[in-house]
Image (tube, rainbow, N blue to C red; front, side, top):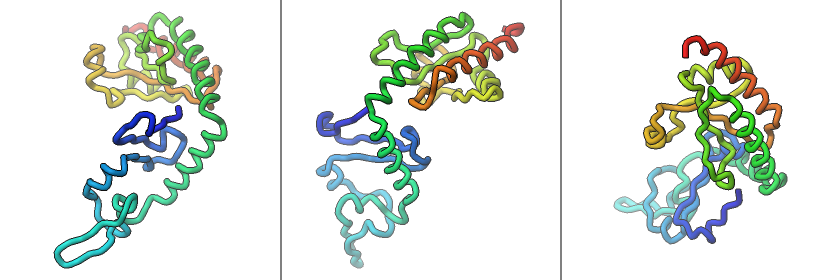
Length: 204
């Protein structure tokens, strides 16, 4: 979605590039100029220094002050290309495709009575991420079987251990959908889940 940092009036905003089709290892930190000017650099290296004296140092103006050493040039170029690509498609179109696909996925996954779905009842606030578990089966085992069927999900606590404790579980499987996914991908997920369930059914 589009983010307007001025409308939010946020002090900082951070996002990682790989969540928006860019290479790994690149991201963006936005900060208000007055706050960044007051902060001291936490990395030292080339291009972030203005003048060096025997007893003191002055730092380069923003943003160079925080850009020490050799930059991740290929990552920056890749992130720029990813942003251009997404803008050419259009945020509204991406959101429309995602909403339709998630609606279909929830509809199909809800038919599987052996599945626990962890989704918000507020459909307007639902993201393109759906967490689930096969009842009585560890998510890592489920993810491994899905992987063997060509279906990629993530399993684990998803950097949300307090939420997992609140839900009374250790971890979940998580399917993430984007505008390049189709209903066929959802159907393949359901098919793979049925296979996984049949493999463990006798032990549950």
